[in-house]
View 1 (cartoon, rainbow, N blue to C red):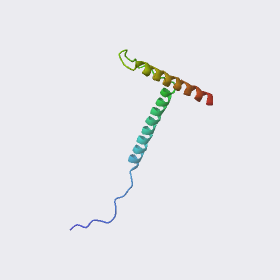
View 2 (spheres, rainbow, N blue to C red):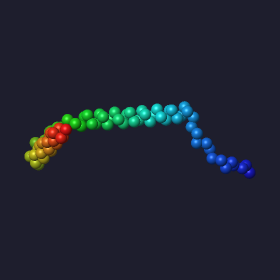
View 3 (cartoon, rainbow, N blue to C red):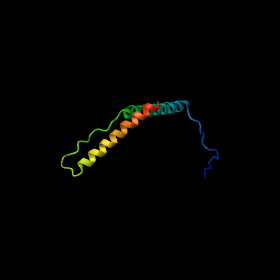
View 4 (cartoon, rainbow, N blue to C red):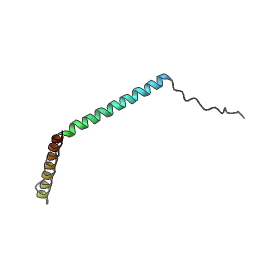
Length: 85
């Protein structure tokens, strides 16, 4: 029988591999930051659009009232945030 050595394999990583991993991590973080920035900018002045409720819906009036209430609430929140600044 062949005897196995009791030493574990070295954990060292070549510099090429090390810098490659660092570069990949930087790229990943850059992409995440860019997406977060995009979401933050697009979400600021986003107001819900009218979904165009069909006339044959039985509860059209209630839907329109609820939508209008949500819209006014969102606008008030934006004004309140601006006032806090």
